[in-house]
Every structure is written in structure tokens, then in C-alpha cells.
Length: 114
Length: 117
Image 1 (cartoon, rainbow over the protein chains, first blue to last red):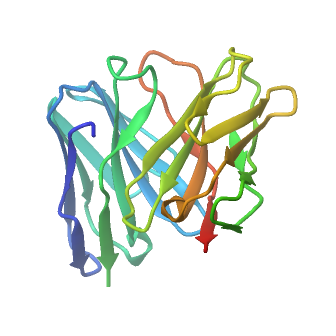
Image 2 (image 1 turned 90 degrees about the vertical axis):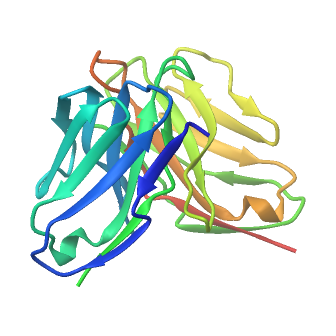
């Protein structure tokens, strides 16, 4: 258990509405990641962070933004949700104090966009 | 860009038997990391085993072991003495060497394993 929580765990929203998912960690990990999981695609990286206010894009970043104003929180925002963003979203951390370059995952958030 | 291929969408094994899940990957890197993650029905992603490419010895964790063939770019997972609790989706993942910013994972599409009585 790497001390990762995600909120909300489930959310249903309508097309065009903004949505923010939160990833919270309690153990001062430096690196944080957001992935989405879809059938037939495995997990794909959306954005990642390598420190407070330091973020970068992943493989599928279009339509998403992130923010990290403090070490423990990494927020993923869908500015205007679309049905194609219906997915399960996972947050992950990595920290060399645990195991070099190994990522540990949160419990996931299931998002449905109607 | 790296790619990871899991060619077996679904597999089934009887309790106490042994099963092997296949994974191949494509990369031009020499040093990298490979992982197997397990996702049971609870949806939690659980690290099963980790392999460093510069180590020739195959990684082992209790009933789980890998067959790492670097030249063939193959990384299969063997589960011995299968248990009902091993029923899950299994993902193979590749990580390139550390670039100093973050270590990004590329996942395969997964193999759904069913353990039966």
C-alpha cells in the first residue's frame, strides 16, 4: 500500500460539463501519474508530474489538463467532458525509496459521461 | 515508441496447475524494466513481478516467475500451483531507462486468466 487514494471513486456526468478527479498521497512521493484504462487498450498515460508545478503530457493528453500545487495532490481535469472520456482512471506514484522506477497504483475512478 | 504485445486475450487453468502468459515487446533500448501487474475483479492494479533488463537472472516471487529472453524481446509469466485467487487480468508493461523526469509505463492489452476447480 503506497498510501494513494482517489476521489471520487465513481462519477456520472453529462457531456460538456467540467470534471475534476483527485489523487491524494500521504507519503511524499515525487512522481505522480494519471492513466486511463479502456477495453482493448490496457492502460495509457495521460499526464505525469515530477514535482510541484512540474507536469508533462503523456500518450493521450488531448482534452485533459493537470495541476499539482502541493506534493500530496495531483488533479486531473476534463474541461468539457465527452463520451469518449468514459473510462476508468488510475493514479500512480513512483518513488526510489520504495523500489527504483516501480509504479504503484491507486484504486481507480470509474467515470461515465452521458 | 515502445510497444507491448500480449497475444492471448483469455486463458484458463485448473487449480494447482501451471500456466504461462506470453508477452513480447519492441524497443531499441538496451537497459529497461519489465513488469507484470495483476488486476483482480476489485479493479486494483497489483504489482506481481519486476525484471531489470541488465540482469540475466529471471525474477521470481513465490509462485510467480518470469522467463526473460532479451534477444527475443520476450517476457513471459509463469504461475505455478494456480489458485482461485489468481483469477484476474494480467498486464505486461515496459519502462524505458530513467530520463530524470519520470518513468513512463507502456502496457499491453492484457490477458484474462480464469482459474477453475
